[in-house]
Image 1 (cartoon, rainbow, N blue to C red):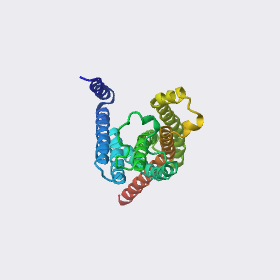
Image 2 (cartoon, rainbow, N blue to C red; image 1 turned 120 degrees about the horizontal axis):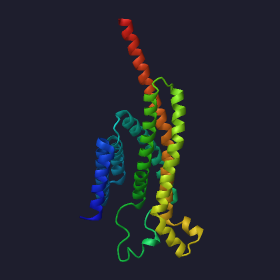
Image 3 (cartoon, rainbow, N blue to C red; image 1 turned 120 degrees about the vertical axis):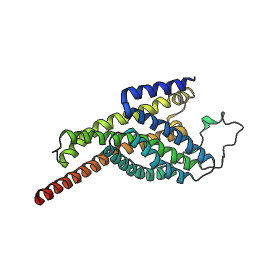
Image 4 (cartoon, rainbow, N blue to C red; image 1 turned 90 degrees about the horizontal axis):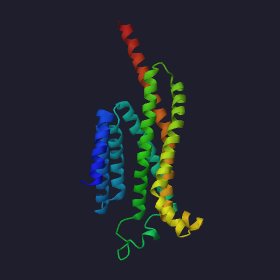
Length: 264
């Protein structure tokens, strides 16, 4: 058995012990999303339209991440809608910035690896860069949406009489903590994955101008910014959607109770 297979088994066992039914569903969510990413890569390599593939698989991956990884339907539904709206807005921004940055494609660091191979595979590097950026931001946005929705719903369950205004204020307080942890996770994840590249820059005596104009660095930095912006938009939007939805449910419930009392 390979090391990867052993780690997958250990992960499955621990998620089952700690999370129970939700842990099992989350584990299968990870597996399904990994298979979806492989399928996306295969479809792109076969020459299918990259924008169409992205438009199909973004909501599909969101649904898999959120609905399989969340035990409460209200949390899942609110998180899905908030994430989809935010990703739609961020996607427009990604299209504009990727066009202005012109950082798609292979950098000089890949020259030796690709020596003797064609660097023109017949697909658009620009469209691939947009798809990669959207999928990279997707995970951070979905995580922030689920965290906010879960916290607000638990608060509503603990205090059923809480007003919409109080719920929004409490959501803002929860959002500060979610923002802090999410941003640290994103930034330190970037430094962890790019440590070898930073060593490359240092040992080859790259100037500051060369670093900030390097394709690999620019693409990674842009992805970090998209993810941070997505989290920033998700926190207030998820709070607003869930607070409004709960207010409507409370009003409908009170209206039904008054109608029932009048009938009696």
